Length: 134
Image 1 (tube, rainbow, N blue to C red):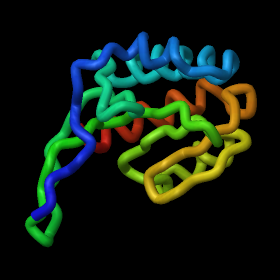
Image 2 (tube, rainbow, N blue to C red; image 1 turned 90 degrees about the vertical axis):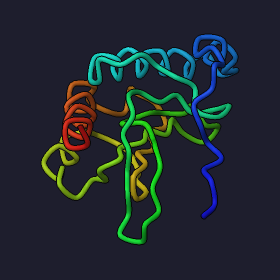
Image 3 (cartoon, rainbow, N blue to C red; image 1 turned 60 degrees about the vertical axis):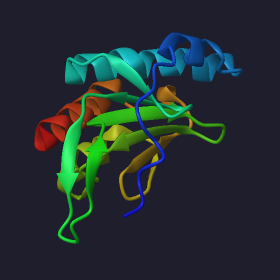
């Protein structure tokens, strides 16, 4: 089985975030950093060179593939702030209706800027997702 390429590293999280060129995205990233620390009670860890993860869990698929991953995390990508909500979004319809302006992928929440969403709802979403995987 192929090994995961994205793994925890010893790279400093603050050095990575300080290197985010767009000032607004950098400020938003620090806000998400604080929010995810509160939601998880975990310290941030760089996963690869561009993802900040919080906590960890072991997964095992029916196929037998297994590995370790973070409970929640984010990356300040060029196009959007990408938040990793490992449980997906189907079970959070009510929260998603109150969240604000966003796009989703299977387990990714894409935000152009934090001003577009309700931060209280965002923290509720992250906290619920973390509890579901703990």
